[in-house]
Image (cartoon, rainbow, N blue to C red; front, side, top):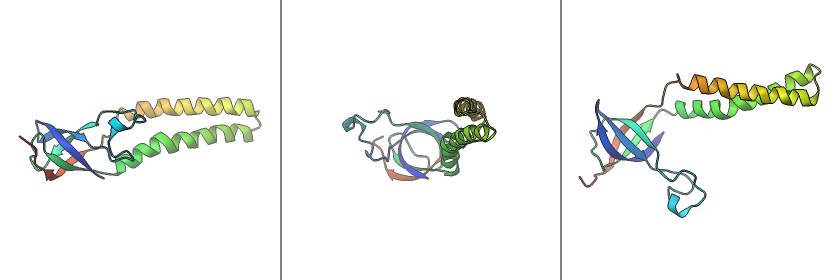
Length: 137
């Protein structure tokens, strides 16, 4: 996955803090859109492979597998747990109300387990790979 970003500051170990430009439907014009809940650009740490300086507009790349893993963890797994949490007790003869309660409990437990596992999961690694525009240094 590639995104545009602006280098904010250089860090030790050939890394830099960058502000990632939003490439969503609003094209990052958050000030003109009252629907956006996140008014600030997200900041990430990226490996500075090209020795970009603060103010430089750059292209950062990251492995897409982390995006897919996050989407599966946040959306697919809880949905499967919700469906199975209802279907299995219902097929075992429990009432609809009991099956709903078990399903709700299973989803809550699922989110608890996901939040505990998330702490130890690997973080996405970003790399500054190209200079788009030299900043005013």
